[in-house]
Image 1: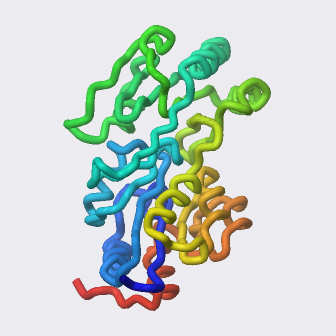
Image 2: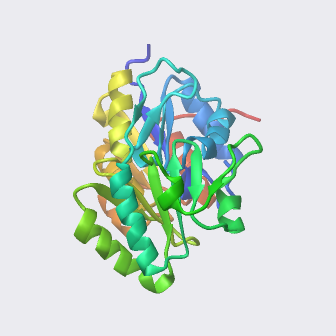
Image 3: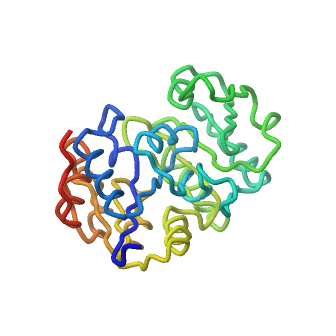
Length: 277
């Protein structure tokens, strides 16, 4: 076993993926080279499993994965692995849904693992979340009636002038029970998970599993749901396109997701040489 192997955590949107939602050939080669050199590569994303597994297979990973910003930590290739699913309570979810109804938000979506519940039909949202033909169909209708299990996450699509009001309400009434984050452009989506859930929780569990110390954890990210992970990692790397708050807590800043930021950093930091095509 390599004595100086690193754990490399990759956020997806705005980080590993280009703006067209693909992995660039150069970055893919460098990630594969890192794996061949003995390093451990994992995906850590706010996305659910079904919206991440395509990229997991594309990189030929055989490692655990962090989904829903840490609310689900599991191993797609090993059902015996000690998975951790930490949903919020249905009671809390229904209170938040009530507040959304009062504010007359555009829509509310709940996810229970890979099952999706959508309050009101919206083809644009369905197109974003329905990744493959094998995905289970959406359950559409009032979440107050349809949602009967503890959800892994809630996603709210508020009206532009209600974003601050809604986030203030979440802080004032639910701060001890939930975490909430705002997606980056172009979607003004507020994502809610159980209190204490973040990508660092998942990274810590996986690092312990592989016996990799904190100083040999490399984490890449670009948005506010990467803050804890970048802060936790011994080598926290903000993308060139990352928000300023993330750059402020990172150890390094690499190039953008459009310019092979991950590939360039791994090549230099781990002294890797990209395979020829």
